Length: 394
Image (cartoon, rainbow, N blue to C red; front, side):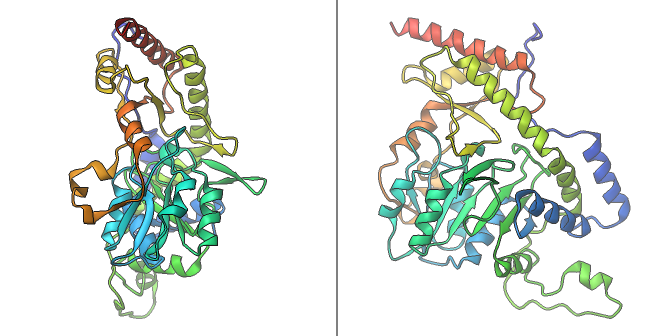
């Protein structure tokens, strides 16, 4: 580690000359909006996760909106989800005029507690929206079983989970292979795969995929590629309300390079996560994240829980003073001003674990370019802080 203590960011996208060359190629092709690069990216992503259909869109929020719309979510419906997620999860439900119903997360993790889902179901419940938080798969097998038994569609907010895997029916499966009804991914710069921004929906339902493709381009019944490639004049029509949710070919070209890198990126992140776990093992007051036996995280983020006597903000500031950037625990939508109106949501039960995770957890730096010495430096800084604060607390 350099004695000048250079800033260690909490995250950093892995982009180099291959992505730059891919964008250059598209720019010189003359076709820069949704076109052949998007189609190729969709096929490659579908092949990677073993999904029959993959549809690219502008970001994961628009993906969630289209997924909810496809399963029929409308005004007055309820969708069971977690408050403990980026606000887009709940916002997408409200875009449909529906009500997010918040249940708590597990005591030993950051994902939805499946044991709380059934008690939250009412005659108005029309979907379950589970989140693979920070890249760690939720207990998808249990969630899907509940959904199927109660005839409730299951949508996965897999924004963070490109490259994550789950053990189902004796086989390791990529998150995105259809287990529920639809999975939605993000390609924001904080994610393991980035296109600058962007999203993807995967599904086994051909009708859902058809709807995604119609709605993402203003509801236009003829795609640009078909119209421009036709030897005859074609007049498009707009049979229903649509949106401008397209991905550009510039983004898709980057995504194709990133997708090829994904196995190596995940492998490096898993190595760094293992190193964090070993390096923090001797700090008994910290709770480090652990994979269930049935999950393999892509380790998009490494989030630790602090002891009660270690103040979150002070700890983050002390680390920042040492050149280490962190982020607080995942937000809770129900605590934001946008959700102050009680009619905007329903809390199905106490959200104590969700609130505690937001207030008592911090996300440590983890990215593919990170060096082992950087991990050891972060661990040493935490060890010093814990020792100092524990001594001060008596």
